[in-house]
Length: 53
Length: 377
Image (tube, rainbow over all chains, first blue to last red; front, side, top):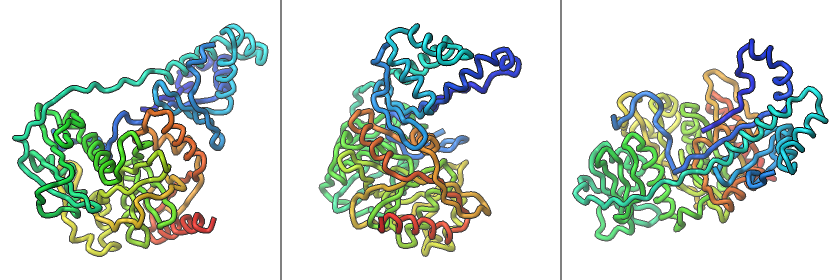
């Protein structure tokens, strides 16, 4: 599971309104948080169809 | 400030900080700017000390917004990982419809399956180790479906029970048990199992990772046919004691899309049986490869494989962020702090690349040069 800070995903209107705050937050820099699998696994099936359905 | 929330480990790798949080076993990759603010926050006695400092340093900054940002980040990083419950399910011995025995590195393994479909989750990748039935296998597994759940038992003890659609988790658990058995290790001895394939030249090894369909198994099959040895396909295990990647005996699984390329490149590939496992996904072939001389090798680099039609061959250095984003979400990594530290120690020392290719001869040449570089270093 990947979580990312999406400071850029705000509407244009919001962006204009929050211009000052937004600029400051961008300067904060970015991060990602990555969680490894909780248990061992082989390649998961590609989306669309599972042999056990 | 609440310093119990701070990262357990912090490593500077290239232009990013890689932070590890014990509570959640999560890896966070952050920029210098973010790391500075995080440090400043953690070093402040009070929230107001932090916001005052921010206001002083930058008139335009919104200290409250930045404070919220840092605090919600730390909250996410410290969410306690939930441990799976250990329920007891007694083995059902009536589910032993099909029995196979395998001899791997001189050790005999027996597996009971309840039906053909369940057999196809494990047997085709090990079929080249099949032996005649022996009275006394050294280890015995049962794999079956009951109450819509797939069960895996080792010597009649439940190892895992998952919804049958999550068969890849049973495959993963089985491989882990198999690796422990053939290498004489316990599950707690491993740093993790990387989702990727590993190739060795008998000196070092390289881990190839990438999303499904990007050509990592095809590339490894080609390399294994051109002077290199396959150390592990799909699941590459790293041991804590040595920080080396160990031999995984499973054959390379090749999807139908790559059959035509390998038919012309690998002798007898055409004659391998075609396995139909998932009706919607086409056929699969399992290519057995010769075992490397040693059971483990140091891994010197991670390469993200990127097959792209008509692309020129290009091996380029990439950031730890790009590699971690591909590697971590699809790999199992032990939550043990000792193992996490060893993983990060290793990550700090290796080369990180992206390899784009379409021409098989050129890509083999490129990987050969990299192995040669490690040999002469």
